[in-house]
Length: 204
Image (cartoon, rainbow, N blue to C red; front, side, top):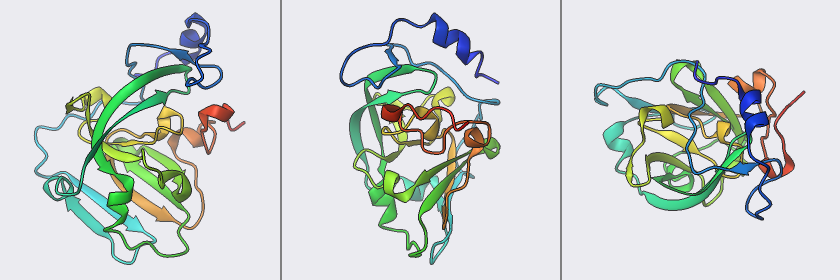
């Protein structure tokens, strides 16, 4: 487990920043902290790696890494905000925009939410409304380089308008659902939505 003691980091943190770009209760860091539960997956190669699209879709998909990399890509610079109170500004990512992925998926009309499925059974829930945004993507590069293993190599979800736990690492698929279901951290007390501007940290 790499999560450590988030409360210690919170109380040791600098005073919150008053920059208009920084949500309430956050402080800005130049570092990129590593926070996750469980071990870091290591891939010798991606020959057997695949990405699944399932649930409320007309045609389930299973894409190889090579097939996924044929989809249109984009590079964007965004701010990210962790529930443990750090924010990192002007981070640059390259990946497949969510809206490009949706062009190859036939979603059934009753679908309202998505569960991101990752290595080790980790999950994160998001509404389709939140995902349908210009800055949501399936990221495979950070700052011009492939993601480091601790930051989600080879693929992670990037949802800048939510706390960073929703930008799930080691992404392996998306499940379309007719209603919201809690993901891993949501079952352990985190908020179902995770909007940093509303300080939606805890669901209790």
